[in-house]
Length: 281
Image (cartoon, rainbow, N blue to C red; front, side):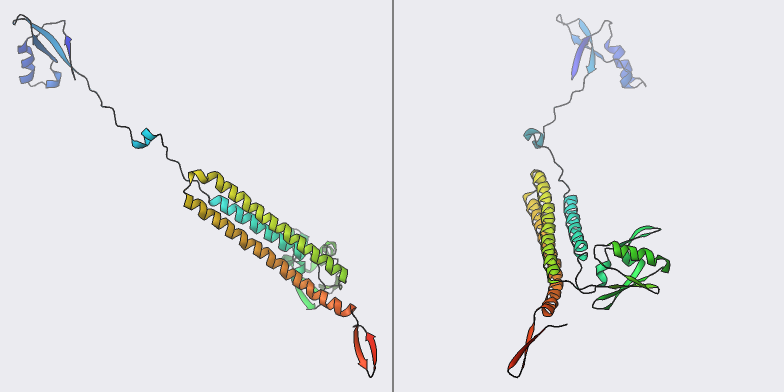
């Protein structure tokens, strides 16, 4: 754009032309010119002033519509948190059921027992080897013979109700038989534990689904459905795992129930025409 500015000085076309034909840069020449006067003779001097303008840019479609680009939320932590909570529930269930004593010896029944050592509290299986001598007897062999008394106290203070005895450099723990009433009570505890852990798993599921629901507006519908499906499948998997663990424990207790029944229920044998009652010793 050219603006005409009147000059307080008078210049001639010749002086302007001398700049154009000289060695000096045309950028150094005075930017002026002459406009023909009304009488045809007088020329009014003026300066040429350049003014650069910019055209208004066209608004983008997104600006016109008022849309903004939203980042898709990362749902990885939601899944990993739900997974961790469900795994913790299963671990807690296994630890709780391990505390339930059955009438048969099992090396794993002492896994939850903790022993005070110079390095802090450690699981019994980290400081000793537990083995089964027979159906109702356990052997505990410490890695360090000096820890024998400490391990003995730890086993006695556990809820298993065992009273191990020292036998040289090892401990011998006899597993006392369970009564029918004990076994029935154990089965109820297993059932209750199963329900509690399944509730914990479902709570983890609900928290994950709530988080997905809050972020659903910023996510494609297909991704939302996929995540919900993954959480549901994860929940079913862990619920089944809890049921399998409890079923195995009930089966283990049920075997003891069977043997208790054999001991407590009399059988009949016939000698000639007479019947004689007797019980298994």
